[in-house]
Length: 461
Image 1 (cartoon, rainbow, N blue to C red):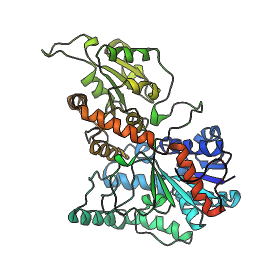
Image 2 (image 1 turned 90 degrees about the horizontal axis):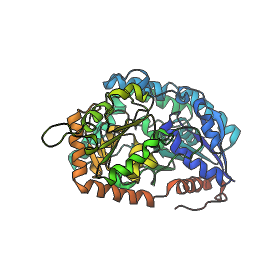
Image 3 (image 1 turned 30 degrees about the horizontal axis):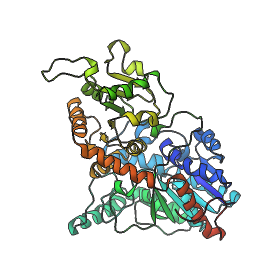
Image 4 (image 1 turned 45 degrees about the vertical axis):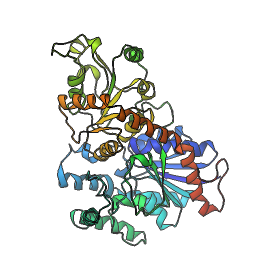
């Protein structure tokens, strides 16, 4: 039996992919203790781990600071978000993880990339450590600009010079005071300071990074500092704990039968979602419905609803009847708070999304091409990777116009290359290690500490 200590930030999109790996470990008889925010302890228990509430804002269960504080924009907003979400809670989280390491005596520490405390304490104690990257890979590289900049990868001498400069300026100038505070935590643990931006550290100090997704969706890097394994999709186990934001979730509505019927009649089915963090319907949902769910014939006259697309919309934390009053709802619209994406995506022609990575991967696993419109959090990087892989169109804006959305959807539907590339990525995702392979790699890392891989799994996939 292997003892595993898991630490995750208290955000659903970070915690739930890790739960797929934990379920594999607990099912194989390994002892897992999982520290996270109090709002998610029931989900931790449901996958067979012992749940521990970790102190500090890092695991408070609240939304990221960029959402809670009304999205202050620019460098000021970035600094505020990084301080509130990552740095201010870090000392308390480190202290909590140190106590847990003393109590649990783990053979390996598993963390998501948003939780710095686990990997830092594991590094200080010389424990094996594995980090799950739940977003596109953010490790700084000579081949890429800083994560979130939206800069495309480059292999040219000029591009390498630009990237080196930007990757030094961000931690050394723009965020220098935050970087110093982060390094103070390292030195307090007896670790040497690091020059790379502290957001990289949970991956940079790991023995291995398990990156959600596949290589076809990622930028090439010639200088990865740690081994990276692309593990495909890590779907959250069905635990009865409610909807899974990254991949839909929720009850099956009666109108779900309309979807295969619409496609059989030659009508496209378009799925529109903003995920669960950035949920203002004015950003994407309303313009999408305005541009797509009110069809017109070529002469410009309004056509019967059955001629146009069937538009399926999720509203997350918004009441569907408030967003789309039933009396004025287009006949070609179907709406729900959440949906079981695994039941909807097989009947979907295009996913229109603000770029949540879980939903994007769910669509691509079903071979569905995308239109991505989002720039907050990691969404600009997600959209750029989708476009680069040829699986869809990235609009690089949070509030696209209805005509812009309609044109993008038409482009994706009209060009079969988008669906062909989406299906190619689907094949890659199906062939990836998945949760079982990811769990085997965690045990492989633990073997350095125990001298033997635990029962039920062995070796790397």
